[in-house]
Image (cartoon, rainbow, N blue to C red; front, side):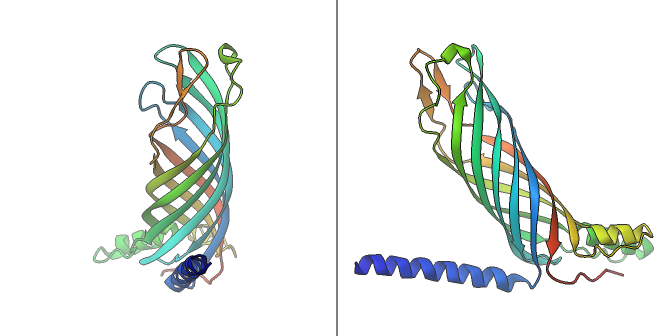
Length: 244
């Protein structure tokens, strides 16, 4: 019992420290919703290709240029993968998954100095785009991987879908809609509304697990790496000052 209490205290302490760290990164907190597209490219035979579509919500701490932060994402994805079995038949399989990620990010400096009028223009453009880059872990709960091929009618669910640990690197832009409209001489009060662009490359850290069917064919359920594209809208809970 004492060991359990100690473990609980450690867990509470860890999450408390994590929350204090994220909230102290910046007063700017952003929440939003985004759509996702996972582009699976085949890495080898028996490894699926195809796309998963979906979306979800995110919260982001640390948003100002030249500052660190973290972006927490939760989404659900679903789509069809096409898997070539032992260099033979291409078998479609439906795939559903819950996706979670914590991206540690850095908003790049945006001042362009020593270039006169051009530098000022570029600074304003970068300030509106607010580019960032980062890396972090992810976790995917595969809720279903169903074989849709008539060839394998005896297999409706492919064993246990399992869970996957992920590693992601990438970057993107937080485009300030209000600033862009103002630069185009269109008056807008959308100063705290952002269009989100998020491009990542994701590695699956789990071993590619083969699933033996009742026939002599072997079906692989996972893949090595894929592109992760996100587009969405976010709202910032802090005033945004325009760069002059």
